[in-house]
Image (spheres, rainbow, N blue to C red):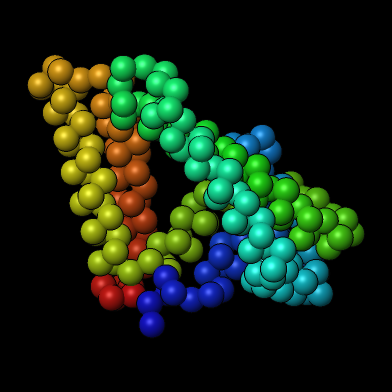
Length: 205
């Protein structure tokens, strides 16, 4: 089965082995998921507790996720209810951004409640699990065909938006935003694909 479907995929991206234990990258990020993630040095017992807590979705977790989604929906449609510009797509993008920020706040609080007792005894460390290290993990667990398909979609979106901005000259703010987001996403997918191909992994993995 492809690595994408392995349950321990997030674990490989969140822990890094060290002689004295494990470096753990906390999922909690303030403010609104836009800040840096704290890293902790944990032992085997603490690692097992963290993995168990984050892998087990109990009734409390289901309730929190349901509440987060229900409260995020009004923000998602905020642009349609209270238009902030004449650009409907821009209004939808703003609503999506606000919904994403709110969901991150809820997730931060939920993860803090799950992990606070374990991390209270863990030592913070300046060593990091870097962007490149996580990129390699995500590349390894994502099938090549999925990366190619996603890359084509993002490059297509980038191309359409770029055509509107530079050629058609009938663009608006949302076209510019979509061009930037599509281009950055396409570059990220290309970076994952490059890392995967350099690692020599078979196309189906």
